[in-house]
Image (cartoon, rainbow over the protein chains, first blue to last red):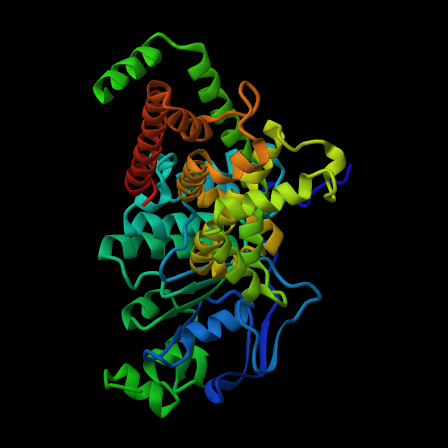
Length: 247
Length: 232
């Protein structure tokens, strides 16, 4: 019998993620260039905050990086031979029409985790994100904050080396935002590379290791967080941090 | 006289009249089996059309939607030609047996189940697609997940299919032959008994059929309510 590779059961700290390389990546829709050309490399474990005004191409960049969309031109590659284990949490969590715990078990089943291991892993993750009281509640009747935490728990059970988050807190109240940010820190501590979009400067200050700043579909700046917030290099980022309306 | 027939019909029902209940039992057997077979084939077919892109897909959707309104007598004629002695399946010897009736009802119900489940699964897929791709799911792995998550809608669709099967008369009349004790079901009996002037039996069967239709609709309503409350 073949043995499964189950990262969940072998180590609590994840092996370091490979670097993500964008090489001349563009994305067009009906001849209109929505993003790019972008060339940059994300190394280390971040967290990288992708910032910029609405319509700058933040979500698009995340989807291209995660492989949900193919680039029109250029290449998205990982430095290592293998594509790392990845997960993504969306602005609107996409949850299955079943109980909270069944949502996690489904994700584990899809990833070929042996049946006998699934239930325990799912319950551990629910407990970690403070959801054990509603493990049997239908996922879609949970509150907005609980739904987003469930989406994070689903990502957690997959032990991703890279986690993409697309404006995960934009529809939440402060208490729920705090819980989501705490969860993001837990992923970071486990060694998961975070790539997260936000247009909230305060949130970026709280979480960022480095910042990738976009405007008008172009990468304007990629600098460590302290540099970005104190002495932004690009004119667009200076205006953005100064609170001007940037397009 | 009509009043009189109504009372006789009620007493047939209340006394569990053998002839009447034999007819009801056969009706249920034929329609339930037909719906079961149609569901096993139709739901995966509908989900597959929703999931995969292939040449002729648009045409297939149009045909499936159009066949939802297939006149029962045409379905009956098709199955009759298929099963008649000279037909391609004539050797099976199914014509004028309950098996033929099941087949005719499958032909009627399958397009309904496939077309409606295709719509529902496609709607769900639109919502789930990015998450599924993110989880690394193949299309064939998406199918069971989508069918399970559409379960309440599919149950409603199933009941609609059962309503269609149990209420039609043309197809089962043509391929079953309305033979007493063998292929006589509620709808065909009502036609025959009314023609013969045996109103009590026709009326008794009519009451059972009507009750059944009511129950089906109550079921559809309850499933809808339950879904709204539980799954959101």
